[in-house]
Length: 372
Image (tube, rainbow, N blue to C red; front, side, top):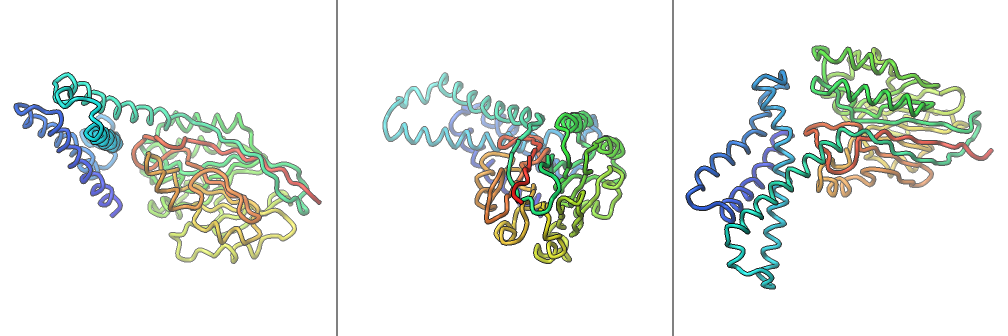
């Protein structure tokens, strides 16, 4: 269903782009050639959804891999043509450039080249941005209550979406960065793995994650993609050295509560009040919830901090403008009531390996416990 919606949203703007480029830039003798080439390239993304990942050198793998970049390319091609049409409208109203110049071969060649190069440039910049791991660091204060520690450094990531196509080198760079950060606590916020035991790289991913060592351990919650892939019942997390919190709470070093919620795909998921009922009143509460969908409700509880992912900060402009409307906090930091909320844009992505909004980030949260 999701792919059907995305494909429909892909085809409709493509019809507009196809017709506008054909009308504005293509001479009569080349319209058939243009039509065949455009339709062939535009068909790659819908066709790629019928293929599994496949080996990189296989036909299925090539189509699948190409399709991942075709989708964002045509998104920005559509936006570029739309902006060009708006400029033409403005020019029609104010007569800035003469109609003779707009109709000239030189102007058409320059305009079409600019549109294509701009679309390619944005996608290439998005690929580089996606593959660059960045750190977002925050410092907050939380009531100490009876905690025996003064400071807690948390490294938080979500949305790894590990599967066969993810490069080992990216995960190696991630684990090295965590080692450099040297957090007291490592937390994974869901959608970490969507592959299965047949994925040849899964054992390597598990080995790399087992190398993450922190003072208080490595914890995780499940996301919707673990649910889709059946990894909620899989062995990936235990083999990776992660303790999964499934609607449960642990007390860390007699100093703070760490609570983890099941994703909302789990019918039996507890309400936040039901989950926190068993939290120790005299200790701070750090809550993990894959989706930041209940900020209002959580802000009325005893939770001091909530960590979430899922949104990807929209991933591709202008989708981030939509996620800002859907979620009260689609990325970054928000304090509401007595709870401080963090939503990461994710360390990786699901779908095209292109990120034109947000960053592939590790959130580092320095908590200072204050008061008596």
